Amino acid sequence: MRDAFDTINPIVAFVFFAFALVMPMLLMHPALLGISLVCALIWLFMLRGKKAWGYILKFVLPIMLLTTIINPLFNHAGITTLFYIRFNPVTLESIIYGVSSAAMLASVVLWFACFNQIFTSDKIVYLLGRFAPGLSLVVSMALRFVPLFTKQAKRIAAAQRGAGMGVGGGSIINRARNGLSILSSLITWALESSVTTADSMRSRGYGLHPRKSFTSYRFDGRDALIGGLLALGMLSCALASGFKLISIRFFPSYKTNEITPLFIAFLIAYALTLLIPVIMNSIEAYRWHLSRSKL
Image (cartoon, rainbow, N blue to C red; front, top):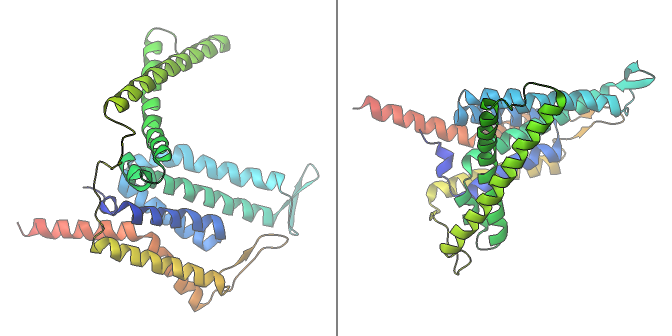
């Protein structure tokens, strides 16, 4: 079944992703980072199913582990020294900051993964085509060519492996030579594809005015409702930050705001805002199940 958030107007969807990406980077509060990480994980599993496990194990977990380990080794700020590694102190504050940075990076990566699933090249052209046609073209082509490059690289590697020129065996020199051969073939294919794409775009009248997107996206009542909920969520974050309901300090000592009823209410509002796509999918799934039960 198609994701319900995929049918939202691209302007509203872009505002949602901007909010989801910017908030963890601005505040870096552990509670907000945990909520952002969990909400992004839930939606990613809805979008990709079991394939999300591969993405998490290959990209998200290594990023988190690397950031968590590296930061205390190089950042020695903080007053609570736990132990020493070759006369270099490892502090509690640097460990907490490393864990928070890892959670922030992981949540950003997960939200970008969701963004890549929802935002097609046509939606990007719809958003930026009239104001920055060159930028919209570059972004849409980048989103298209990255998976194409990956598939083509796998095809070339499989062909060379079948010819006994794979990168998994032999001496280091032979493996490096075979890897460079794959890279050379991939660059040649990319140049040929770019020429073909340019000729195709020219023949189809690229650059003529006025520019229009292929799909016409209407702004209806549901888009207004989701936009209003997003506005309330962003307003709650602004008020919480302005009235110091949420604050954090990592150095020289770790300190965060008190847990008050208003702070808990803000966390609930923040979580509900990020769970808008999940709630929409749940409502659509319930409607679908209800309609099938009536047949």
